[in-house]
Length: 260
Image (cartoon, rainbow, N blue to C red; front, side, top):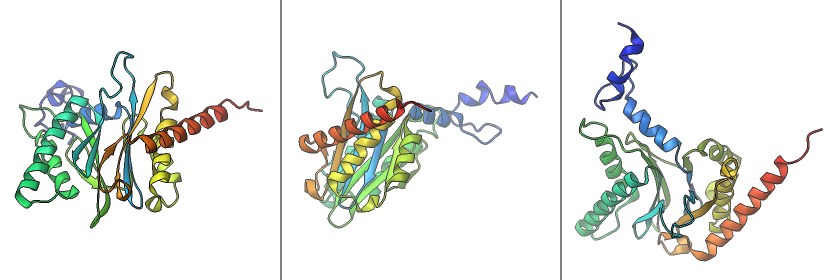
């Protein structure tokens, strides 16, 4: 039988079937949905963790806080989502329920790794049942506790997760990864230095898409926020946007230099 026929619709429709190459094509399609999404990044410094997104302004009629891609799950846990926003908010609701159940049973905040395991298991279960589809979603979670310090995890559409010092999802992920490699002493960065670096990476990554307006948004949790996850804190957000705009301007001027 023709192999090209076998690997066609017969294997990319059911979620419970492997292709002859051992691939689950629906999971790969979900990963592509994430790769084509807006960019999100997470960076872990000395005493804080920053989540940042480039939110494309789809319509001037939207309210400023519409279509937010950074949410709080617990008082000290934030989540940024790349992919389908509706999937992200559905997963966020499940995560909040898990966090609330843990707090009710143990009278304390759920550790981030435990919450990641529960979210990852939920997302992985969607790849096992033919009645569902995989979540077209990757999420980055951040937290800070006095006992554990800053923590940063990323969960993929297949349900796997890892801890990071810096990570990215979305269409500018390759550029963000290159910028991460240039950073020195990332784990030793202070809060202000960290938010500036995050903004510069987001603005530079958006450079190729600058014909469309976007809004830089961030979430931060750390020692300086007293362990609370804050979304767009005014002072730090303005510092970050100024640093990002300057980095984007420098990127533009350098690209416009004549070649001799």
